[in-house]
Length: 317
Image (cartoon, rainbow, N blue to C red; front, top):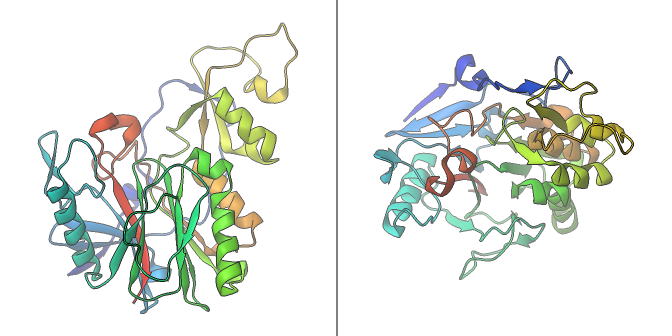
């Protein structure tokens, strides 16, 4: 078993956007970006956060593409979700390899049927069948809470004092519904957690460099979050003046708004974590973009129905 750190090149590598971007020269950082570590076991590569790895009673990890048995367009891949193009046998073998590499073969994986909601489940034991929802919380040893992603934001929460954990799937709908804030509320209600004690690991997801959404999505965020303008960047192909004019409520008769903008879901969820009382120093963000790093990660936006699924897990020994 080997433990090796990602290089700066791996963390920072991003795709070049060829279309004209917003006039803003730089965008605020999405949070504390640390040198995440890579656990590599028999070809399976798992991303981990050093601050969480120090907790001997905690298991956590974010999967990557290498090390599996699934055949994705002629390449072997660690697909951890039951997709149409893959077989159940392959996925189960991939999950076995992933848990073995993580040293969590004795933990029972709890994976939800995700529906882009704000539904959160409390688990004392593993369910007999898959539950619909997008987040789970527990304080019971032996359970490995997991969420599947292929662009959406995976978030793992841990309360080191109460020894309680949560796994969260935050797409744009879940982010709009404040699912991460509601998960913190569940930790408070069931385990009396304090937000200031929590650690939050925001795993690889599609970045603000690549996540293109329509103005109808952006408008929903703008009507609910005062800080939402900071989560968007313009995606334009022309040379029109007045960048992001539709955010400034241009009157009728002026140039129409651009059809699409770029949304930074990691930044949006970090803002919600801060608003809920999580310390900035305890919010640990991966800089890896799923759309940019298709060699390492799955991206539904880039691969379509042939995309696999990443799995982000957390549990108590």
